[in-house]
Image (cartoon, rainbow, N blue to C red; front, side):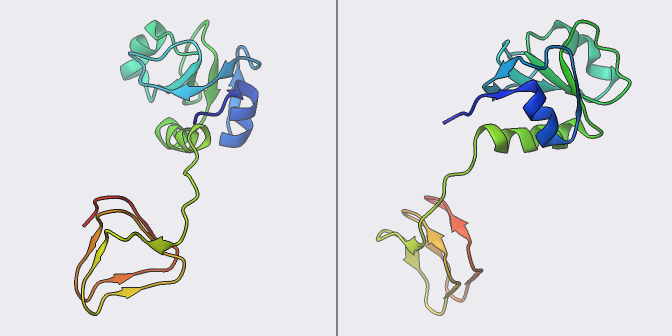
Length: 141
C-alpha cells in the first residue's frame, strides 16, 4: 500500500533541497512519460530535460543547476539513487515472518540461518547456505 508524502517531507528524507510547491502531496513514483500530478519522477541531466519539462509529474528529483522553470523539484546529487530511496519510502517492504513454507524444497546439507523467511515453492539446493534474516520470495531457486 502506497504512502502519501509532501514534497517538503520527501526532500528532508532524501537529503535534498526542495523548490516549488513544497506542500504538494505525492502518493507514488512513475517514469517521466507516465507520471501524474501526484507522482514523483526523476531527471538526471540536460539530455532528458525536455522530457522532464513536458512531464506531468508532481515533483522531479533533479541535480543542482538543471534549469526546470515552473516545476516543483527536489535537488539531489544523484537523482537515480534518490529515486530508489523514494520507492522504498512510498512502498515499504512488508515485514516477513521467519519460517519455511510447507511447499519449499530444502536440499540435503543446506544450512539455514536464524530468522530466515522461505516462501512458497522455493527450492534451496543441497549444500546451500542461507544467511541470517534472509527473505526468499515465492518460486525462487
